[in-house]
Length: 129
Image (cartoon, rainbow, N blue to C red; front, top):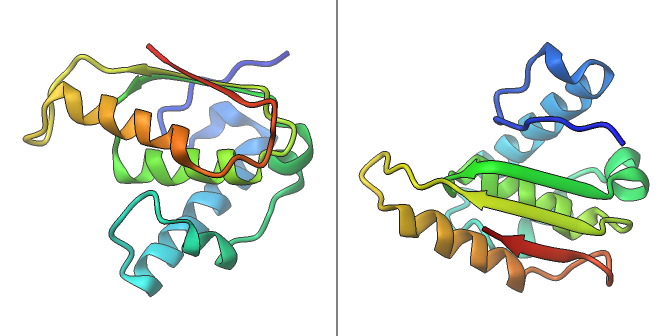
């Protein structure tokens, strides 16, 4: 199993997957821009996105360290949960740092909201630390 440290600043460290992740983030941003999307957990936007085979058929484990609940991070995780049909595990380690005028509790609340998203994989376990 390969591990990737997702800081949501897609760079060359992702090698061949970097281009796919970059395109996914661009697509997510376009949907946000076109729909003036506000609530990060509304599932209507998912109808506009392509379903990448690597997410749908391959992605099993996602670990996020230092989750702060940023809009982009939430969109990406909602995408993974909504379309990762073979996902088994999503581990979110919530950041204790405070930033952008928000408390550390904001990240925790947003992480907890991810548990209410309709999961593509019936065996997906979401753990929040």
